[in-house]
Length: 120
Length: 113
Image (cartoon, rainbow over all chains, first blue to last red):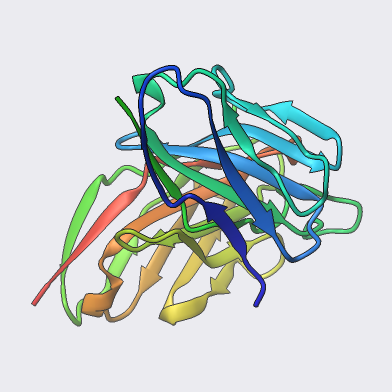
């Protein structure tokens, strides 16, 4: 089954304790992205990756790191979590774009089930 | 800057009644537009998308949306709502760089019996 998986689904942690949220897709997509969802704010992009070893910041990258060493995996790293990073996190991947020559988000994104993170 | 506005934060519709969720976008070129649905505790599922061509697009679960360039709108419609349609709905536009989806803040749909 084509899917995007995230682990863990739920996590409660304390301020300053490093954590990693894993994301994996089995659709051979080049583009992957992380979003956070907060009430009243919708989804905002944290980081994205256009391909292996190619990553860049989204709208809200502060306090986060990512890596893309393999096409299928795109982990999100919080080196020193703070309470303002309490949120619902979604990983997404996307096939090549809806028109020839277009890649990345010019096509639908397939979302993982989400990771609910609470930082105390 | 590109943006998406969903004017209605919360809408309540009677089961069997018609539904229209509004979405307005700000974008300089031909937009790539999407509607996603998020059921409680679930991830986001694509309902439909518009890239080009026919301005009325059909999606899953009986939803449709109409792209109106003159009004910068991409409203979502359904002729008869079912209780299972209760969820949060997000309109999104692909940004010009092709690197992100720009989401609206969402509209929560409640269905009354």
